[in-house]
Image (tube, rainbow, N blue to C red; front, side):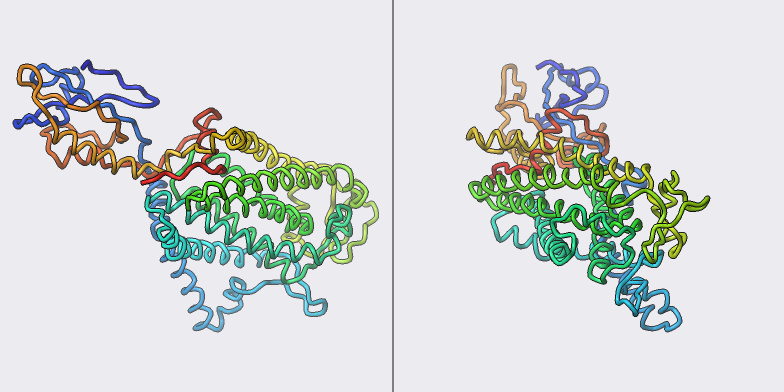
Length: 500
């Protein structure tokens, strides 16, 4: 067999030499480069390249954070609790982490300010601890009880289970707030009475915890193994976090509540369909996938665009350009400091509660288009995902089934099974012509990383390390294509479960 050139995209061939017992081993470096073994023969094993491990300082730190999420989070929470309990003088500071700030006893409502940030930080820590604990001690055991034995399938099941729990709780809470509000199914009312400075404790807690969740999601996708749609998800989380924070500080919690409800309901059906897939209920999964598509189109491309349209058509009527008293809500007369057109500042006005809580706040065309631009960017991402969802739907409707599997779902198991096959194949070596050893089966295809190649005296242990080592992290921007489509479709579709 001739030595094959390495393919940078998919695979390479590794030359095998033979030890004193005639067992193939990895050839020395010089022979690898020449393509000829010591006895003049050439045995090549086809291997598939795996992503290189991220051994940078940041990659190592992220891996360490992932492995110690519960311990770090619990220790931070205990430190805050003990400081609050043991040091009375520190309670004015530590209280901000546990309680909502800016309560007005006269009205029984809350406002915004810098002291909300400690509560958000507290929420990020709590969500980190809860997510890791629920996944490790509730969802993963439940997955094993449901017959899911493969490691990464168990992890994916736990991830989707956590999203289902979170979205079910916060969508229900958001809908309760929305249903009992004056802006229930009323696009005009979500913009009316600007600035809506005061809010209930329930609304404030809901909003700050939603902000904490999305910040924590940014940490999660950077701590854990990256997927091919990493940068799409990262961009989505950044835009969502920006919209939540800006709408909170700019007195637009009403429209924020509506959009969060539209987003959360879709994720409930998505996570539910994925869980059914992992448990092996393919028919139920296909039905759930159909419900998911319907909810996606209605919520994220119907009602969501209606909200975007209201910014264009209703906002100029309900929120005339100009400056307003942030306390009373009255529109202020034209002056050098409060121009009638609202000026041309964006972040200066958006951050008004933090720089001047009781001062004037202005609204101008640039702020309007900034919010519309962020919402439009989010819509572009969801449209790209919709196209990929349609590909899965077509396969389901044509009877093919949404069986696109993600390579990172089954990576560990492929390595384990390939290692067993390798041991068996080497054990079944038989003599060929001229007394030369020959493989009795076709060359193996196995995933290895470049860090697994060792040159020098070959040993069985070193050869095993070659096949067993795997990369846990990878980085890079995904380019739209068939590979990316398969990767993302696996996440949002209902591929057939892989049987052991």
